[in-house]
Length: 104
View: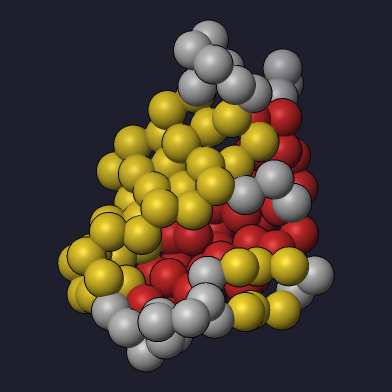
């Protein structure tokens, strides 16, 4: 599935009605998060897992203990998913954070 400019494009041989147990999404543009959550709702089986990679600087805790954007992303994610683990990948290979989530 390609997410570009707030529109969803279905690849050949894959329909948005296809359901999967695990969905891996690596995004750079956090403005597309609404579409990512729509894809998760459409494609992920109940109790399926979402592996979501986002830029760390867009979602990490600030020095004062708060989150950027008033933690809007986490609130939206928690509406339909349980966040099992949040892993900062910056020390390993890129400036990203991995969210391991389970669909409710």
